[in-house]
Image (cartoon, rainbow, N blue to C red; front, side):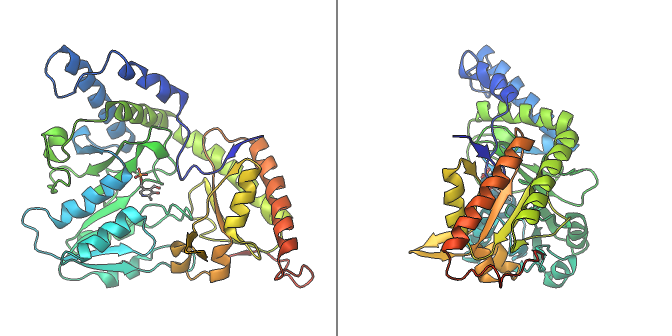
Length: 396
Ligand SMILES: Cc1ncc(COP(=O)(O)O)c(C=O)c1O
């Protein structure tokens, strides 16, 4: 059966050059990078070269790159690291209602530890409005954490404007750029952001490596206390294979990002256009233009997202739904709920995220398959009456 991978926001295929770059570290290059003898030295150099590649991609200094095990760990380090940093008196954090669980649940945890968190809403198109952040600021706000791009809708947030508001109020600014990295430009030097999260496996690297950019001169408390690794900001022997792979992935991004983002946008736009032309009653969830070039989130009215997802899986197509099954009943995506989406629409929502390796043929096959499955599921739905259906598709 043909296999089409349209779930790059979940994880990405390992680039062949990444796989090749890590090979020696599965063999002779096994030393601990902290060892000062020969077995450690070459490995230390490889880790530092990877850090330099990441720094060069963002335009920051290598010392500003703290390597972690994942985007999740980096998000924890950003939020807890600021909350618990030495001398910190403030107890208030501002974030949004559409953050990834790595931020959401970290903030919820801090609420149990005496911190206050304001979860600012998004507008109907899924964007955090700077004014909403401005009005959420309190005298003791220590941190504003707003993602650069949303993982479900691809919506791009005005991080520059929000960072300026945070700084004006004397708070630090963190952005979770796990999804934005490699898809849209992020200029660390000019962005009013103090902390930025990234993850290796979202950019054709390996799972188990991510990181946090920490603006020079800034102190944060460690989450993992241990050895002196990462200048005391993250203890633990480095995942050398993951880090070397991530370094290679970032070096490829530095060379190819603009070209690849343009190609993926072309494919995504063709996919979206064809679906809108051929299938009635679909709704675009998210902003029509302020969106990652690879992502499209659609509600197929009168169809359950999970049913669609499983039927597409049987035809070899991998995509994702934000809804979750809780004790037998389908709960729509909290992200779409925060956007004020109709609950039935949000149950029929699917995210397609394209990326490295996708082709025009993939798009053509997927469009045919989706049309077939949607027709089949609607034919079985007691709610669907084609003659009454609105044949006008909506872009909310
Ligand atoms: C926006 C966002 N933040 C954080 C993460 C977590 O990254 P990781 O999978 O590296 O823990 C993800 C993963 O989906 C994400 O999309």
